[in-house]
Amino acid sequence: MEFEAPNFDLSEDELDDETVVLRVAGEIHATTAPEFSERLNDAIASGKTGVVLDLTGVEFIDSTGLSVLLNGLRRVTRVRGTMVLACANPTVLRLFEITKLDSTFEILPNCDDAIERLRQVTAD
Image (tube, rainbow, N blue to C red):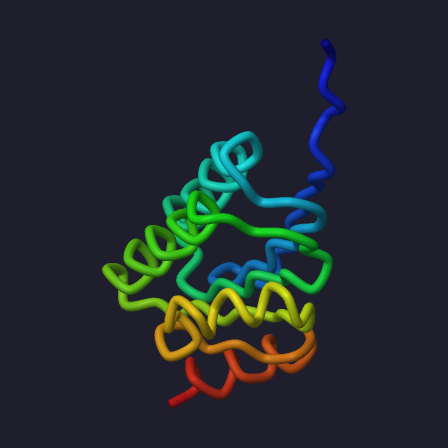
């Protein structure tokens, strides 16, 4: 039996020396989380202290994906950075609510709003 490759795409957009937008689409779960984790960790390790995760294209996320988000938040916070999420999918947002992570992460409905919020926070 052959399984279909998971629907997952990740792109990176550097806004400046300190800020990056990681755009994720598809599914974040045990199969795709390692690549997501590596790219997020690489961005932070390269000196990005402002991270916007554009999850507006994410259709599904499981506990492995949530773990990647929490570990990324911990890493960026250690370097006195900020992470803001963009997410509009009601199913994904519901998972953040159920797990109470909606109070841990700053979540805005679109990427432009998330970038604007990150700039407000880092300007203070």
